[in-house]
Image 1 (cartoon, one colour):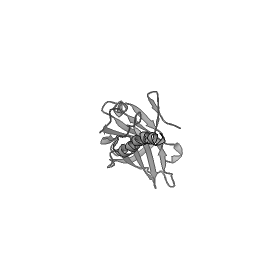
Image 2 (cartoon, rainbow, N blue to C red; image 1 turned 135 degrees about the vertical axis):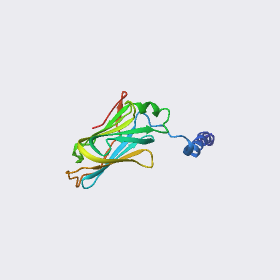
Image 3 (spheres, rainbow, N blue to C red; image 1 turned 180 degrees about the horizontal axis):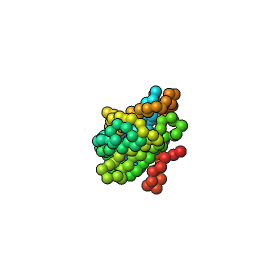
Image 4 (cartoon, helix red, strand yellow; image 1 turned 90 degrees about the vertical axis):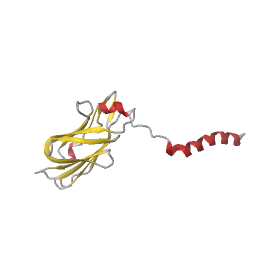
Length: 171
């Protein structure tokens, strides 16, 4: 009787293990921003914003400098479950002690012409924007004239927490 029980439970488990690599991954729901990473150098910083689904960079404004950077995006290859999240807002905040004059980073899917990734700084900075080849990362190179960023730590912002349809950052 014991060997029959092992066969009954062992065969489905073995089949599941064999076919697991071909099973589709569960979609990431209720989140848009996966994480944000900041690496700093001498008077410069690189901000990498990682998304939970592929996006295409369209354009950004202003072109070279300012205290607010608005990046227009186009979501691509979105699952049916994630399609609802594309039209919401989500924010992440960088701790002020990071040395970078960064106020917040927001995904604004509810704006006309969007969605947009908006990065707000405490003071005007110079920047360049580009999309990484993985189509899940937008990178912003920031130059802070007149501000020393020596010995600024690299920072990873945890993914935002969503509660009741509203997204907020964990502090």
